[in-house]
Image (cartoon, rainbow, N blue to C red; front, side, top):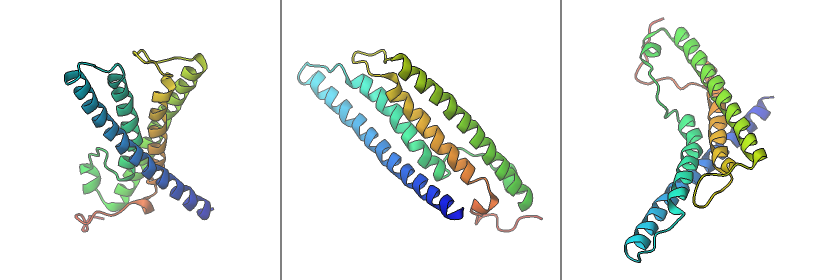
Length: 173
């Protein structure tokens, strides 16, 4: 069973890394598109019809492609003052509880988002834009980011998965 779990974790981590790279490429695409828009608008008097929409879609995709990497690296906001001052056993229990709550909340949000993706797909809903595209193309990135991030919270729930802080080596209890 641990071999299967280790393989799952490896695949999860690799998928997260690929998603982060794609998110970075999306940000590059946003910058290039804006530069293109400025050049065509102000130097050639030929504004584009698609850049504004593309930037909105690419920003959504980039943010949610990067979200699992931020969660993996524990780069999300965390207020840890209480956990840092309590005895280690209590801190471990608190970390486990918080990570399980994070998993449940993100997993539920991913589930709701998936239901919306399915609705958008089945009804053929398109974006309200100059160049409309199927809305699920954009919103599926939300589902993807939330789902992969929720799995990291589940993976970090056991106390054995936590890295101890070097700053607080001397803890009470």
